[in-house]
Length: 150
Image (cartoon, rainbow, N blue to C red; front, side, top):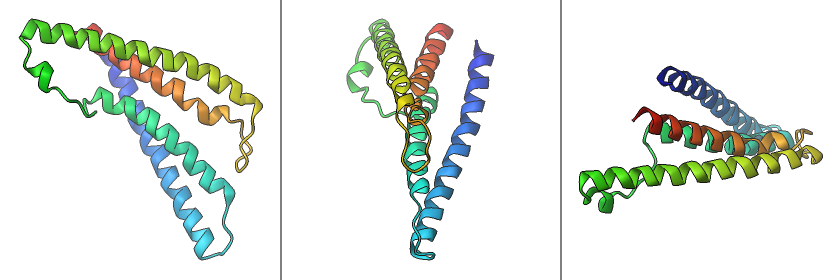
């Protein structure tokens, strides 16, 4: 299981770097086209917006795996060790349930996006909406893997 998590983490790292670089390039092109060429493009703004959604959802799974999310643990830290472990188990299962429901309902939302076409890129909106179930699925995967490895 640890090897699978490590592999997914490495792939996610590369994907996030690629998405972020393309997003920055699209924004730079948009600024250049608007202020230097005086011919703004619609596609670059829409692409940057869609990629921001992808980076946010995939990045939240990546940050969760590395323990980088903001957490207020002052009350949990005051608990005795056995109770602290029990609270962390309950917390993880609640997060897994929330991520699972977000993935489930996000999939339905992404599937409904097949009927809508984006204005600038001409792609089905499901390409943008798919970030939600995939990101939530990765969050659930990392949480389950962490819980199973303990």
